[in-house]
Image (cartoon, rainbow, N blue to C red; front, side, top):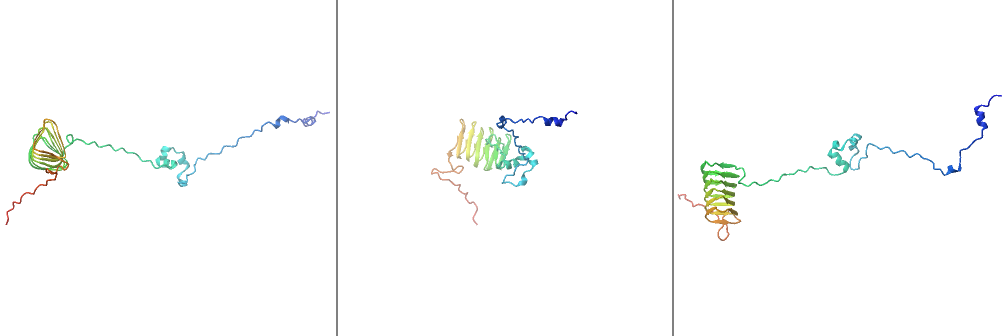
Length: 226
């Protein structure tokens, strides 16, 4: 008699079940749901067209995309660079660069016109035509009137004539031989003034004792009658 085969032996054995009552309460393991795939291309906001975003544009760093594209993503207004304008400091006329200078060894006589600033270190005799400013240095001397100028700064020099300006500054033993009419006058000690001083808000226009502006009378007509 031959030996029983594998299938015959398996059939002869009783069927054993692995079921037990405890298995009913055991939790059934479940696999977690797969994670959703993240899209590399974001959805365009409703305020902008769809073609403003691309995969290459999304993967690019914000610095390379530029300020304009970054503002589109954040919805903020375009960045405007702030420029700081330096404040202009007013330089006193004593330290300003003059437009015209009469040197210490120069003596002039006649009529002189300038626009901004004249500095006299020598001597000038005659008429000045300007609405600018005037500086007279330590050894400077002016023989003539000063009319309708903005500011006159006399530092150690002298003026022989009337002065009608907006602002007058005398320092370092400055000398004035004539009448003065100005809105503002600053006089340091040891300065000399031989004449009248009229400080009024209408300067350089002259006013009388009643506060009225005195107009210059026209010169008399010397043309001989025919």
